[in-house]
Length: 365
Image (cartoon, rainbow, N blue to C red):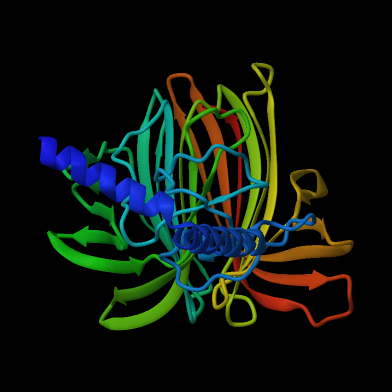
């Protein structure tokens, strides 16, 4: 013990007695801290809501949103004007169910084909559905609409299964499968690219999770197709009375992905107004967004103003799926319209065109 104490004393004396060594170390620390601060400053969102570019999707701080410390998965602290970037490869979706109301949805876009799947839960019901729009047929085809309650496996991430439907959504991605006579009739495998979360209006802890540019592989009727898609998962107290409008696009101009909403939750019971408008460049990771107060929707259009430029997303419905979620105290009508979409800017540039899902739901949860 004595020799160890003397060694420590001599070591401290040597360091403190050498002013040149201390000065060098101090200057080096200052330079490293300054460089780190400059790097973080480049990643902070600008005053108009435009975020910087992203490099690797698995590095949250490089995707345009500042991150000074490791973030807890799907535990954002702010609303839609300050989205949190999540690790796209290491975290699966939370187990099912995760709240009083829980809603999981997938929009899968392919050349000539669209696939929609969702699971919807309230205290009174749980239902899941899957339908397609085949451009060669020209109408919505419902393949499944069931009130069977799905079973969550023992996995730490979301893994649901039923008689004809299953979905697994773990670290990095997953798969949606439709079964018929015990065999896979339709399968979509997906891989995460960019993942964002934030707190919707009225929520103090329960997140919404957006994945706007999934990479897809569809296997259906002997064909294999590649595409891009979107997924959203949210959970928490949103009722009992609510209503929302939502537009979400396929790839626009090759690598742009739009999603925008205009909603009101908990009407008359701590009413929460909720609006957002996001446009992601899937190649660079740049996220352009309007402030919540600067975006809204009408019947067939969504509007936003960003940096003084007015954006308009105009939809042209091609097919419709409508369903009443009705059991016990729940009575909400959902209307889903598969559409053409055109996104124009008020700066004279050519519009971006593609396809979209327009979702509207009003009633009681």
